[in-house]
Amino acid sequence: MDDAARGTGGFWGGVRPYLEKAPLTALFLGMSSGFPFALLAATLTNRLAEAGIEKKSVSAFALALLVYSFKWLWAPLIDRMRLPILADMIGHRRSWLWLCACFAAVAVFVLGVADPRAGLQAVIVGALLLGFAGATFDIVIDAYRIELLRPDQLGVGSGMSQYGWRLGAFFAASIALAVASVSNWSLGYIACIPLAFAGPVASIFAGEPARHAEPKPLRSAGEALAAFTGPLADFFRRRGALIVLLFVLVHKIGDTMANLMIRDLLVGLGFTKQEILTGDVWVGFFALLAGIFVGGILYARLGMKRSVLVSLVLMAVSNLSFAGLAAMGHSMPMLAFTIGFENFASGIGGVTVVAYLSALCNLSFTATQFALLSAAAAIVGRFLTGTTAGALIEVFGYVDFYLLTTAFALPGILLFWLMMRAGLIDASVGSAGTVEESEAP
Image (tube, rainbow, N blue to C red; front, side):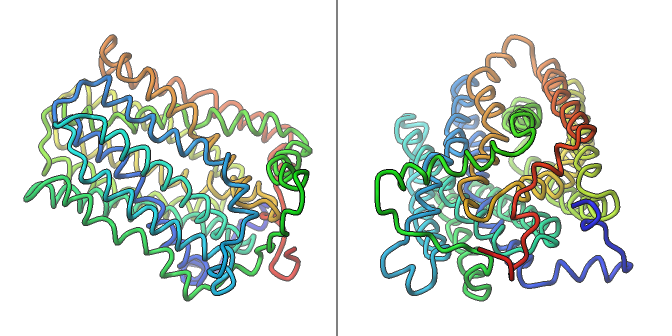
Protein backbone atom coordinates (compact mmCIF):
# COMPACT_ATOMS: atom_id res chain seq x y z
CA MET A 1 0.00 0.00 0.00
CA ASP A 2 2.60 2.52 1.05
CA ASP A 3 4.89 1.84 -1.88
CA ALA A 4 1.99 2.28 -4.27
CA ALA A 5 1.03 5.51 -2.60
CA ARG A 6 4.41 7.13 -3.16
CA GLY A 7 4.62 9.09 -6.36
CA THR A 8 7.10 11.09 -8.38
CA GLY A 9 7.04 13.18 -11.55
CA GLY A 10 7.19 16.76 -10.32
CA PHE A 11 4.33 19.26 -10.04
CA TRP A 12 2.36 18.22 -13.14
CA GLY A 13 2.86 14.58 -12.31
CA GLY A 14 1.22 15.28 -8.95
CA VAL A 15 -1.64 17.32 -10.43
CA ARG A 16 -2.53 15.03 -13.37
CA PRO A 17 -4.20 12.30 -11.27
CA TYR A 18 -6.64 14.87 -9.85
CA LEU A 19 -7.88 15.65 -13.38
CA GLU A 20 -8.90 12.09 -14.25
CA LYS A 21 -12.61 11.31 -14.59
CA ALA A 22 -13.05 9.21 -11.44
CA PRO A 23 -11.40 11.68 -9.00
CA LEU A 24 -13.30 14.58 -10.61
CA THR A 25 -16.55 12.65 -10.10
CA ALA A 26 -15.55 12.15 -6.45
CA LEU A 27 -15.37 15.95 -6.14
CA PHE A 28 -19.06 16.36 -7.09
CA LEU A 29 -20.11 13.36 -5.01
CA GLY A 30 -18.46 15.01 -2.02
CA MET A 31 -20.44 18.20 -2.61
CA SER A 32 -23.73 16.31 -2.38
CA SER A 33 -22.47 14.50 0.73
CA GLY A 34 -21.29 17.60 2.57
CA PHE A 35 -24.22 19.97 2.34
CA PRO A 36 -26.80 18.08 4.49
CA PHE A 37 -24.26 17.65 7.29
CA ALA A 38 -23.43 21.37 7.25
CA LEU A 39 -27.11 22.32 7.48
CA LEU A 40 -27.52 19.98 10.45
CA ALA A 41 -24.33 20.88 12.32
CA ALA A 42 -22.91 24.41 12.42
CA THR A 43 -25.74 26.12 10.52
CA LEU A 44 -28.53 24.64 12.65
CA THR A 45 -26.53 25.39 15.81
CA ASN A 46 -26.18 29.01 14.62
CA ARG A 47 -29.90 29.22 13.90
CA LEU A 48 -30.93 27.77 17.27
CA ALA A 49 -28.48 29.91 19.26
CA GLU A 50 -29.75 33.02 17.51
CA ALA A 51 -33.33 32.02 18.39
CA GLY A 52 -32.35 32.00 22.08
CA ILE A 53 -32.47 28.23 22.59
CA GLU A 54 -30.52 27.17 25.72
CA LYS A 55 -27.11 25.51 25.29
CA LYS A 56 -28.22 22.07 26.49
CA SER A 57 -30.96 21.98 23.86
CA VAL A 58 -28.62 23.28 21.15
CA SER A 59 -26.02 20.59 21.85
CA ALA A 60 -28.77 17.93 22.04
CA PHE A 61 -29.51 18.55 18.35
CA ALA A 62 -26.11 16.96 17.66
CA LEU A 63 -27.96 13.72 18.40
CA ALA A 64 -29.64 14.12 15.00
CA LEU A 65 -26.18 13.54 13.55
CA LEU A 66 -26.10 10.21 15.38
CA VAL A 67 -28.36 8.92 12.60
CA TYR A 68 -25.20 8.94 10.46
CA SER A 69 -23.59 6.64 13.00
CA PHE A 70 -26.29 4.00 12.57
CA LYS A 71 -26.46 4.03 8.76
CA TRP A 72 -24.83 0.60 8.69
CA LEU A 73 -28.15 -0.82 9.89
CA TRP A 74 -29.81 -0.27 6.51
CA ALA A 75 -26.68 -0.18 4.31
CA PRO A 76 -27.03 -3.93 3.44
CA LEU A 77 -30.38 -3.13 1.82
CA ILE A 78 -28.65 -0.64 -0.49
CA ASP A 79 -25.92 -3.17 -1.25
CA ARG A 80 -28.41 -5.93 -2.13
CA MET A 81 -31.71 -4.30 -3.25
CA ARG A 82 -32.19 -3.23 -6.86
CA LEU A 83 -34.71 -0.45 -7.51
CA PRO A 84 -37.31 -1.67 -10.04
CA ILE A 85 -37.13 -0.11 -13.53
CA LEU A 86 -34.66 2.63 -12.52
CA ALA A 87 -31.82 0.16 -11.84
CA ASP A 88 -32.34 -1.45 -15.25
CA MET A 89 -32.13 1.99 -16.88
CA ILE A 90 -29.08 3.52 -15.20
CA GLY A 91 -27.60 0.83 -12.95
CA HIS A 92 -27.79 -0.27 -9.33
CA ARG A 93 -25.58 2.39 -7.72
CA ARG A 94 -26.77 5.33 -9.80
CA SER A 95 -30.46 4.52 -9.29
CA TRP A 96 -29.99 4.77 -5.53
CA LEU A 97 -27.93 7.95 -6.01
CA TRP A 98 -30.80 9.76 -7.74
CA LEU A 99 -33.46 8.49 -5.33
CA CYS A 100 -31.44 9.65 -2.30
CA ALA A 101 -30.83 13.07 -3.85
CA CYS A 102 -34.57 13.63 -4.14
CA PHE A 103 -35.10 12.43 -0.56
CA ALA A 104 -32.42 14.83 0.74
CA ALA A 105 -34.00 17.74 -1.14
CA VAL A 106 -37.38 17.09 0.50
CA ALA A 107 -35.78 16.80 3.95
CA VAL A 108 -33.95 20.13 3.56
CA PHE A 109 -37.26 21.79 2.70
CA VAL A 110 -38.98 20.30 5.78
CA LEU A 111 -36.22 21.49 8.14
CA GLY A 112 -36.03 24.87 6.45
CA VAL A 113 -39.69 25.75 6.97
CA ALA A 114 -39.62 24.70 10.66
CA ASP A 115 -39.39 27.73 12.99
CA PRO A 116 -37.57 27.12 16.33
CA ARG A 117 -39.20 30.21 17.87
CA ALA A 118 -42.62 28.63 17.37
CA GLY A 119 -41.54 25.39 19.03
CA LEU A 120 -38.86 22.76 18.74
CA GLN A 121 -41.06 19.81 17.73
CA ALA A 122 -41.10 20.65 14.00
CA VAL A 123 -37.37 21.36 14.08
CA ILE A 124 -36.71 17.97 15.70
CA VAL A 125 -38.75 16.20 13.02
CA GLY A 126 -36.95 18.09 10.26
CA ALA A 127 -33.51 17.46 11.77
CA LEU A 128 -34.13 13.73 12.15
CA LEU A 129 -35.53 13.49 8.61
CA LEU A 130 -32.51 15.28 7.15
CA GLY A 131 -30.20 13.15 9.29
CA PHE A 132 -31.73 9.97 7.87
CA ALA A 133 -31.77 11.32 4.31
CA GLY A 134 -28.17 12.54 4.53
CA ALA A 135 -26.96 9.30 6.07
CA THR A 136 -28.64 7.20 3.37
CA PHE A 137 -27.23 9.51 0.69
CA ASP A 138 -23.77 9.00 2.22
CA ILE A 139 -24.09 5.20 2.03
CA VAL A 140 -24.67 5.35 -1.71
CA ILE A 141 -22.14 8.11 -2.41
CA ASP A 142 -19.32 6.35 -0.54
CA ALA A 143 -19.98 2.99 -2.20
CA TYR A 144 -20.14 4.58 -5.65
CA ARG A 145 -16.91 6.53 -5.02
CA ILE A 146 -14.89 3.57 -3.72
CA GLU A 147 -16.01 1.28 -6.57
CA LEU A 148 -15.37 3.97 -9.18
CA LEU A 149 -11.77 4.61 -8.04
CA ARG A 150 -8.88 2.25 -8.74
CA PRO A 151 -6.71 1.26 -5.75
CA ASP A 152 -3.99 3.69 -6.86
CA GLN A 153 -6.62 6.47 -7.00
CA LEU A 154 -7.92 6.04 -3.44
CA GLY A 155 -5.63 8.74 -1.99
CA VAL A 156 -6.36 11.22 -4.80
CA GLY A 157 -10.05 10.30 -4.82
CA SER A 158 -10.31 10.73 -1.06
CA GLY A 159 -8.71 14.15 -1.40
CA MET A 160 -11.12 15.19 -4.15
CA SER A 161 -14.04 13.81 -2.15
CA GLN A 162 -12.93 15.93 0.80
CA TYR A 163 -12.59 18.97 -1.46
CA GLY A 164 -16.12 18.31 -2.61
CA TRP A 165 -17.44 17.68 0.89
CA ARG A 166 -16.05 20.98 2.12
CA LEU A 167 -17.24 22.76 -1.02
CA GLY A 168 -20.72 21.42 -0.37
CA ALA A 169 -20.52 22.42 3.30
CA PHE A 170 -19.03 25.80 2.34
CA PHE A 171 -21.72 26.53 -0.24
CA ALA A 172 -24.48 25.39 2.13
CA ALA A 173 -23.17 27.47 5.06
CA SER A 174 -22.47 30.50 2.85
CA ILE A 175 -25.78 30.39 0.99
CA ALA A 176 -27.83 29.77 4.14
CA LEU A 177 -26.10 32.57 6.09
CA ALA A 178 -26.13 35.04 3.20
CA VAL A 179 -29.81 34.48 2.36
CA ALA A 180 -30.80 34.46 6.06
CA SER A 181 -28.98 37.78 6.55
CA VAL A 182 -31.19 39.53 3.99
CA SER A 183 -34.32 37.41 4.26
CA ASN A 184 -34.93 34.48 6.67
CA TRP A 185 -33.53 31.07 7.58
CA SER A 186 -36.27 29.18 5.73
CA LEU A 187 -35.30 30.64 2.39
CA GLY A 188 -31.65 30.14 3.30
CA TYR A 189 -32.19 26.40 3.67
CA ILE A 190 -34.35 26.07 0.55
CA ALA A 191 -31.70 27.86 -1.53
CA CYS A 192 -29.29 25.01 -0.74
CA ILE A 193 -31.44 22.27 -2.30
CA PRO A 194 -29.70 22.24 -5.74
CA LEU A 195 -26.52 21.01 -4.03
CA ALA A 196 -28.19 17.61 -3.61
CA PHE A 197 -27.92 16.96 -7.35
CA ALA A 198 -24.21 17.73 -7.93
CA GLY A 199 -23.19 14.07 -7.48
CA PRO A 200 -26.03 12.48 -9.43
CA VAL A 201 -25.44 14.80 -12.40
CA ALA A 202 -21.71 13.91 -12.37
CA SER A 203 -22.64 10.21 -12.37
CA ILE A 204 -24.30 10.67 -15.76
CA PHE A 205 -20.83 11.21 -17.25
CA ALA A 206 -18.96 8.69 -15.06
CA GLY A 207 -21.36 5.79 -15.56
CA GLU A 208 -21.86 2.76 -13.33
CA PRO A 209 -18.63 1.79 -11.46
CA ALA A 210 -16.51 -0.83 -13.23
CA ARG A 211 -15.56 -2.47 -9.91
CA HIS A 212 -19.19 -2.80 -8.77
CA ALA A 213 -20.36 -6.34 -8.02
CA GLU A 214 -23.99 -6.69 -9.12
CA PRO A 215 -26.12 -7.91 -6.20
CA LYS A 216 -27.61 -11.38 -6.28
CA PRO A 217 -31.35 -11.65 -5.56
CA LEU A 218 -32.21 -12.64 -1.98
CA ARG A 219 -34.05 -15.95 -2.31
CA SER A 220 -34.38 -17.02 1.32
CA ALA A 221 -34.38 -15.76 4.90
CA GLY A 222 -30.90 -17.18 5.31
CA GLU A 223 -29.58 -15.13 2.38
CA ALA A 224 -31.26 -12.01 3.78
CA LEU A 225 -29.58 -12.61 7.14
CA ALA A 226 -26.24 -13.19 5.39
CA ALA A 227 -26.57 -9.76 3.75
CA PHE A 228 -26.27 -8.27 7.24
CA THR A 229 -23.83 -10.71 8.83
CA GLY A 230 -21.53 -11.35 5.85
CA PRO A 231 -19.82 -7.92 5.83
CA LEU A 232 -19.12 -8.17 9.57
CA ALA A 233 -17.81 -11.73 9.32
CA ASP A 234 -15.51 -10.74 6.45
CA PHE A 235 -14.02 -7.84 8.42
CA PHE A 236 -13.51 -9.70 11.68
CA ARG A 237 -11.70 -12.57 9.94
CA ARG A 238 -8.78 -10.20 9.34
CA ARG A 239 -5.78 -10.14 11.67
CA GLY A 240 -6.09 -7.46 14.35
CA ALA A 241 -9.64 -6.53 13.32
CA LEU A 242 -10.72 -5.66 16.87
CA ILE A 243 -7.78 -3.31 17.38
CA VAL A 244 -8.43 -1.66 14.01
CA LEU A 245 -12.08 -1.18 14.97
CA LEU A 246 -11.06 0.33 18.32
CA PHE A 247 -8.88 2.86 16.51
CA VAL A 248 -11.73 3.77 14.17
CA LEU A 249 -14.01 4.32 17.18
CA VAL A 250 -11.72 6.58 19.20
CA HIS A 251 -9.56 8.54 16.75
CA LYS A 252 -12.09 11.35 16.08
CA ILE A 253 -13.61 11.87 19.54
CA GLY A 254 -11.77 15.09 20.34
CA ASP A 255 -12.09 16.54 16.84
CA THR A 256 -15.84 15.84 16.65
CA MET A 257 -16.62 17.34 20.06
CA ALA A 258 -14.58 20.46 19.29
CA ASN A 259 -16.14 21.13 15.89
CA LEU A 260 -19.80 20.54 16.67
CA MET A 261 -19.84 23.26 19.36
CA ILE A 262 -17.74 25.90 17.57
CA ARG A 263 -20.70 27.98 16.31
CA ASP A 264 -22.17 28.08 19.81
CA LEU A 265 -18.80 29.42 21.02
CA LEU A 266 -18.70 32.07 18.29
CA VAL A 267 -22.23 33.29 19.02
CA GLY A 268 -21.40 33.33 22.74
CA LEU A 269 -18.29 35.43 22.08
CA GLY A 270 -20.40 37.99 20.22
CA PHE A 271 -19.35 37.33 16.62
CA THR A 272 -21.87 38.60 14.06
CA LYS A 273 -23.17 36.63 11.06
CA GLN A 274 -20.82 38.54 8.78
CA GLU A 275 -17.84 37.90 11.05
CA ILE A 276 -18.70 34.18 11.22
CA LEU A 277 -19.10 34.10 7.44
CA THR A 278 -15.65 35.67 7.00
CA GLY A 279 -13.67 34.13 9.87
CA ASP A 280 -15.24 30.69 9.99
CA VAL A 281 -16.67 29.87 6.59
CA TRP A 282 -14.29 31.70 4.24
CA VAL A 283 -11.02 31.31 6.14
CA GLY A 284 -11.88 27.70 6.98
CA PHE A 285 -12.66 26.91 3.37
CA PHE A 286 -9.36 28.14 1.96
CA ALA A 287 -7.34 26.65 4.82
CA LEU A 288 -8.99 23.31 4.14
CA LEU A 289 -8.11 23.50 0.45
CA ALA A 290 -4.49 24.06 1.44
CA GLY A 291 -4.67 21.15 3.92
CA ILE A 292 -6.05 18.75 1.32
CA PHE A 293 -3.32 19.76 -1.13
CA VAL A 294 -0.64 19.20 1.53
CA GLY A 295 -2.36 15.95 2.54
CA GLY A 296 -2.03 14.67 -1.01
CA ILE A 297 1.68 15.49 -0.98
CA LEU A 298 2.19 13.81 2.41
CA TYR A 299 0.28 10.71 1.26
CA ALA A 300 2.48 10.46 -1.84
CA ARG A 301 5.78 11.16 -0.08
CA LEU A 302 5.30 9.47 3.30
CA GLY A 303 2.92 6.67 2.38
CA MET A 304 -0.41 5.87 3.96
CA LYS A 305 0.75 4.86 7.43
CA ARG A 306 3.05 7.75 8.29
CA SER A 307 0.80 10.35 6.67
CA VAL A 308 -2.16 9.17 8.77
CA LEU A 309 -0.06 9.42 11.94
CA VAL A 310 1.04 12.98 11.08
CA SER A 311 -2.56 14.02 10.42
CA LEU A 312 -3.77 12.59 13.75
CA VAL A 313 -1.15 14.62 15.65
CA LEU A 314 -2.04 17.83 13.80
CA MET A 315 -5.77 17.40 14.43
CA ALA A 316 -5.14 16.93 18.15
CA VAL A 317 -2.97 20.04 18.38
CA SER A 318 -5.55 22.10 16.47
CA ASN A 319 -8.03 21.70 19.35
CA LEU A 320 -5.69 23.76 21.55
CA SER A 321 -6.31 26.76 19.31
CA PHE A 322 -10.03 26.62 20.19
CA ALA A 323 -9.08 26.93 23.85
CA GLY A 324 -6.93 29.94 22.93
CA LEU A 325 -9.82 31.59 21.13
CA ALA A 326 -12.16 30.97 24.07
CA ALA A 327 -9.60 32.50 26.45
CA MET A 328 -8.92 35.55 24.25
CA GLY A 329 -12.57 36.33 23.50
CA HIS A 330 -13.86 38.34 20.54
CA SER A 331 -10.82 38.59 18.23
CA MET A 332 -11.00 38.30 14.45
CA PRO A 333 -7.25 37.53 14.04
CA MET A 334 -7.49 34.71 16.61
CA LEU A 335 -10.69 33.43 15.01
CA ALA A 336 -8.96 33.31 11.62
CA PHE A 337 -5.93 31.49 13.06
CA THR A 338 -8.05 28.98 14.98
CA ILE A 339 -10.35 28.12 12.10
CA GLY A 340 -7.45 28.14 9.63
CA PHE A 341 -5.30 25.75 11.64
CA GLU A 342 -8.18 23.38 12.40
CA ASN A 343 -9.29 23.18 8.77
CA PHE A 344 -5.71 22.80 7.52
CA ALA A 345 -5.24 19.80 9.84
CA SER A 346 -8.65 18.37 8.94
CA GLY A 347 -7.82 18.66 5.25
CA ILE A 348 -4.71 16.54 5.69
CA GLY A 349 -6.64 13.99 7.76
CA GLY A 350 -9.46 13.93 5.22
CA VAL A 351 -7.10 12.63 2.55
CA THR A 352 -5.11 10.14 4.61
CA VAL A 353 -7.67 8.69 7.03
CA VAL A 354 -10.49 8.40 4.47
CA ALA A 355 -8.11 6.65 2.05
CA TYR A 356 -7.29 4.12 4.78
CA LEU A 357 -10.95 3.53 5.66
CA SER A 358 -11.81 3.12 1.96
CA ALA A 359 -9.01 0.60 1.51
CA LEU A 360 -10.41 -1.48 4.38
CA CYS A 361 -13.53 -2.39 2.36
CA ASN A 362 -14.27 -5.62 0.51
CA LEU A 363 -15.79 -4.85 -2.91
CA SER A 364 -18.52 -7.42 -2.29
CA PHE A 365 -19.79 -5.36 0.67
CA THR A 366 -18.63 -1.82 -0.16
CA ALA A 367 -21.69 0.12 1.01
CA THR A 368 -22.12 -1.82 4.23
CA GLN A 369 -18.49 -1.96 5.32
CA PHE A 370 -17.74 1.70 4.63
CA ALA A 371 -20.99 2.65 6.35
CA LEU A 372 -19.86 0.66 9.37
CA LEU A 373 -16.38 2.18 9.38
CA SER A 374 -17.41 5.79 8.78
CA ALA A 375 -20.22 5.52 11.33
CA ALA A 376 -17.89 4.01 13.91
CA ALA A 377 -15.42 6.85 13.29
CA ALA A 378 -17.90 9.45 14.51
CA ILE A 379 -20.39 7.73 16.81
CA VAL A 380 -18.56 8.20 20.13
CA GLY A 381 -17.75 11.86 19.51
CA ARG A 382 -21.29 12.67 18.37
CA PHE A 383 -22.84 10.83 21.31
CA LEU A 384 -20.61 12.62 23.82
CA THR A 385 -21.32 15.96 22.15
CA GLY A 386 -25.07 15.43 22.16
CA THR A 387 -25.24 14.15 25.74
CA THR A 388 -22.48 15.97 27.63
CA ALA A 389 -20.88 18.82 25.65
CA GLY A 390 -23.39 21.50 26.62
CA ALA A 391 -23.31 20.48 30.28
CA LEU A 392 -19.48 20.32 30.30
CA ILE A 393 -19.27 23.83 28.86
CA GLU A 394 -21.69 25.18 31.46
CA VAL A 395 -19.72 23.57 34.30
CA PHE A 396 -16.10 24.08 33.14
CA GLY A 397 -16.33 26.84 30.54
CA TYR A 398 -15.11 26.80 26.96
CA VAL A 399 -11.37 26.92 27.71
CA ASP A 400 -11.29 23.75 29.81
CA PHE A 401 -13.77 22.06 27.49
CA TYR A 402 -11.45 22.46 24.51
CA LEU A 403 -8.44 21.36 26.55
CA LEU A 404 -10.44 18.24 27.36
CA THR A 405 -11.14 17.59 23.67
CA THR A 406 -7.37 17.71 23.05
CA ALA A 407 -6.83 15.02 25.69
CA PHE A 408 -9.56 12.90 24.06
CA ALA A 409 -7.54 12.85 20.81
CA LEU A 410 -4.43 11.26 22.36
CA PRO A 411 -5.62 7.59 22.58
CA GLY A 412 -6.19 7.45 18.82
CA ILE A 413 -2.64 8.64 18.12
CA LEU A 414 -1.13 6.06 20.46
CA LEU A 415 -3.27 3.24 19.09
CA PHE A 416 -2.39 3.95 15.47
CA TRP A 417 1.31 4.05 16.33
CA LEU A 418 0.99 0.64 17.99
CA MET A 419 -0.86 -0.70 14.93
CA MET A 420 2.01 0.47 12.72
CA ARG A 421 4.56 -1.35 14.85
CA ALA A 422 2.50 -4.56 14.87
CA GLY A 423 1.92 -4.59 11.07
CA LEU A 424 -1.85 -4.49 11.48
CA ILE A 425 -2.46 -1.67 9.02
CA ASP A 426 -1.34 -3.57 5.92
CA ALA A 427 -2.97 -6.75 7.23
CA SER A 428 -6.36 -5.03 7.57
CA VAL A 429 -6.64 -3.78 3.97
CA GLY A 430 -9.51 -5.29 1.93
CA SER A 431 -10.02 -5.87 -1.81
CA ALA A 432 -10.97 -2.20 -2.40
CA GLY A 433 -7.34 -1.39 -1.66
CA THR A 434 -5.86 -4.08 -3.87
CA VAL A 435 -8.21 -5.19 -6.68
CA GLU A 436 -8.03 -3.48 -10.09
CA GLU A 437 -10.98 -3.07 -12.48
CA SER A 438 -10.06 -6.16 -14.51
CA GLU A 439 -10.06 -8.27 -11.36
CA ALA A 440 -13.34 -6.90 -9.97
CA PRO A 441 -15.97 -9.47 -8.94
